[in-house]
Structure formats: structure tokens, C-alpha cells
Amino acid sequence: MGNRVLITGGAGFLGSHLCDRFYREGWNVLCMDNLITGAFSNIQHLEGNERFTFIDYDVTNYLDVDGPLDLILHFASPASPIDYLEMPIQTLKVGSLGTHKSLGLARAKKAKFLLASTSEVYGDPLEHPQKETYWGNVNPTGLRGVYDEAKRFAEAMTMAYHRYHGIDTRIVRIFNTYGSRMRLKDGRALPTFFRQALKNEPITVFGDGSQTRSFTYVDDLVEGIYRLVHSDYVDPVNIGNPEEISILDFAKEIIEITGSKSDIIFEELPADDPQIRQPDISRAKEVLGWQPQTGRREGLMKTMAYFKEQVLNG
Ligand code: NAD
Ligand code: UDP
Image 1 (cartoon, helix red, strand yellow):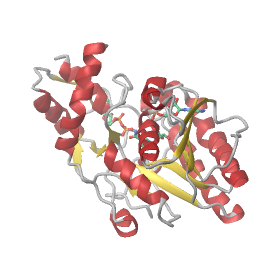
Image 2 (cartoon, rainbow, N blue to C red):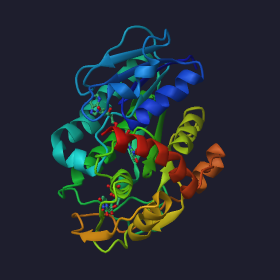
Image 3 (cartoon, rainbow, N blue to C red):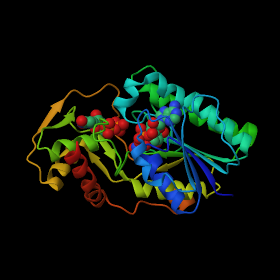
Image 4 (cartoon, rainbow, N blue to C red):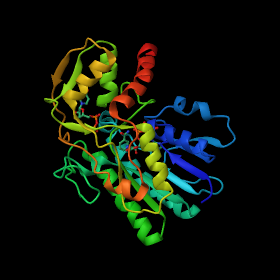
């Protein structure tokens, strides 16, 4: 494989960490983003380097870039529930049309293609922990359906391009990931709880907080994706940290590690909010030799400095 990569959604939280990693590994990085939920500041430090190019573009349109491409990482998509609830049509379009255009470009350039899928394809799961062989429990017409179904379509489209056009494809199913460059107000539990705790404001737990999540530190995710790209494994692979915690205990943990005086208040549970979520990572262990290296507490401590700075500046 050559070393010219296109990263769609490259100015977002995960995309910008991938730009950093591939750049560090010596790749020529093209970052394409229309900045609807991302920020130029996430990749500003790479601008001006010979091996880095930023392209301001909406990937749901006809897609082309000059020169050869060896790899496409398709990460463009709103990802936090408040983002995709505010932008339901863009979310459906980038998961469907955006994936189609990106696959078309991979075909034209004979490039490898990796799709950023999600644990949301499992919906409100009836199997626990979730293995890649589980087909999921998604409400197609519910509010979250715009994201979940777009990603399910994207997976189907990726496999069709693999089977019909012989494209070399990968699918990563990403579980809740955190780290620097998350937006303080993206509405996800982790940045919201950090913001509230650092300001000593009430922590808003939705429902009774018994629903669970399993949080992955961003460097671990990036390592898993890097290994998946270099493997020859085509079926979906879960990348996530199996350490599971209830949202109520998670709120308490954030209060403790920030030394906050915040109280916990309970608000209405959003519709179709998954009750449980935990990756089975046997496949990633077996085919990639991957497992997370960063425990939740250690990862949260590392991320706290970033959130403190954000709270101070904003
Ligand atoms: P993010 O919102 O920070 O990044 C998404 C990026 O895509 C943004 O920079 C946005 O501007 C860009 N984008 C959206 N629509 C676009 C379009 N039509 N054309 C060009 N760019 C567009 O979100 P993130 O957390 O970094 O998520 C990145 C990817 O990873 C998404 O595909 C998401 O579904 C997936 N994912 C993330 C998580 C997580 O925990 N963060 C979990 C599962 C899956
Ligand atoms: N959540 C919460 N308070 C908040 C934001 C989210 O209790 O201020 C809950 C949310 O209902 C869900 C969990 O935290 O059960 C994780 O939500 P997030 O938006 O981070 O991710 P997702 O639901 O996509 O896993």
C-alpha cells in the first residue's frame, strides 16, 4: 500500500486524531470536511506542512481529488445525539450518499476503504455484551433512526462494493469514545458531565441513570483503527473498552475525580436511549491483537486537563 490517505470528517474529534496519527506515521494526509460539527482549529497545527492538505467540501456531493489515493477513511457524520437530532437529513445523507460517493472514489482510485460505523447499529441491544454477529434492535422511525439506519445502510453499501466491485474494505464499529477535542457542548454525557462538574453546576442524569455505557480512550481507538487498516479482515470489528458503567455511577465518578461540589439531578430519558452497551472484543483481540491499554480512570484523568482549559476559555 502507498501512503496517501483521504480522511473524510477529518476536522472532527476522531478524524483529527486520525489525521495526527497517519501524519506521524509518514502518510500524506488529505483532510476533507465541511465543518458542520467539526472545527478547523482541530487540524490547524497540521496546516502548512507539505504532507497535509485541508479540503473544505461536503462529501454528499460528487467527489474527486487530484492524484492517487491509497486509502479512504470515511468518518464524516454528525455523531452526538443532539447533533444528529438537529441535522436529521444531513445525517441520513452523509451516511448514505456520502458513503456511496466515498466508495465510488475508492473504486476510481483503487484505494482501500474503511467505514466508521458505530455500536448504534446494535440499537437497544437484546444481546449483551454485543458481538459483531448480533444484528441489532433498531427503531427505524424513531428519532435516533436517522443515525442508526444511515450507518446500517453504510455498512450494507460497503459490503456491496466489496462483493460486487472487489473493493478492499474495512468496517469498524466504534463504541463511545472520549478524549481531547470533544466539544464541551456536544450534548454527550462525558463532556456535559465534565463541564457541569468543573463549574460546580448540577449534573444532569437522564432517566434513573441505570443505563450503561462503555467508554474508550481515543488513543486506544486510533490504535485499533490503525491495526484494522493494516489487517486483511473485511467483516465488521468492534473497537471499544469493555469496562461497563451505569450513567449514574459515571456521574459520581466525574464528580469525584474533578473534586466537584455538584449535585446530581434527574431529567427525562430521551426516546430509544439504549439501556445497555458493552463491546465483546474477542474478534479485535484475535484478528488485530488489539485490546485497550487505558483504563477509564486513567483516560478520564488525562482528558480532564483538556476540559479544564475549555471551561476556562469558554
Ligand atoms: P464529529 O462531529 O466531531 O466529527 C464528524 C466530522 O464530520 C465533523 O468534522 C463534521 O464537520 C464532518 N462532516 C459531517 N457531515 C459532513 C459532510 N457531509 N461532508 C464533509 N464533512 C462532514 O464526530 P466524531 O465523534 O469525531 O465522529 C466521527 C465519526 O465516528 C462519525 O462517523 C461517527 O458516526 C463515528 N463514531 C463516533 C463515535 C464516538 O464516540 N465519538 C462512536 C461511534 C461512531
Ligand atoms: N446522558 C445523561 N445526561 C446528559 C447526557 C447524556 O444522562 O447530560 C445519558 C444518555 O441518556 C445516555 C448516556 O448518557 O443514556 C450516554 O449518552 P451519550 O449522548 O454520551 O451517548 P449515546 O447515547 O450515543 O451512547
